[in-house]
Each structure stands twice: as structure tokens, then as C-alpha cells.
Length: 113
Image (cartoon, rainbow, N blue to C red; front, side, top):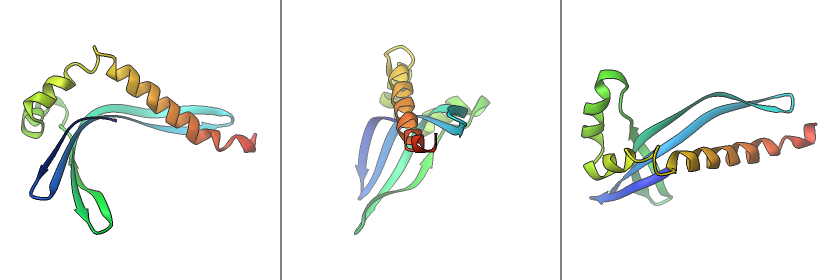
């Protein structure tokens, strides 16, 4: 995940981020990808006595709703940054970080080999 903007308004926090996520499983000794996506998120974060927690989130709907949702959910400065993701190396960096996390997670199962 790459965070592009943090906002605080009336003790509520908005986090605007681009998230590369995936589903993986172990088949024998092979890690298999079951699906992935790269999606912009707006996380609504609240704070209580125990810390911060995500209370809700928004993502743009696909298809003909996408452009309008992007305008309604994300500030222009964030949308402009999202437009660079596939050209500035961010996409590759997020993919690399995701694969590192996948490998670390499944590494704990090495003792079953």
C-alpha cells in the first residue's frame, strides 16, 4: 500500500491510498496466486482509547461509474498522483513488496516440507 494523503477533520481521519492486494495459497511447495487487484482506497479512520481503527472505506465502482466515483471520493491532487502509478515505478514497487510479504508468510510453512 502507498499512502498519498492523510487528512484530519473533527477527530476523524481520511487516508487516501493505492493498494495492491492478492490472494495466495500453498499447493505442495508452490505458492499459487488465486487473484489480485490494484485499487485506490479511501479509508475512514477513527481514534478511541485503544488506538486507531478503520471504521469504513470507499473504492470506486468499476465500469461507467469509475470516473465519477473517483471525482467524488478522492481529492484532485490524489487523483493526479494515482495517474502516475504505472509510470513512476510505484506499481512495480508495490508488486515487489506484496511478493516479499507472500514469501515471508509462506516461509513459516517450510517446516512441513
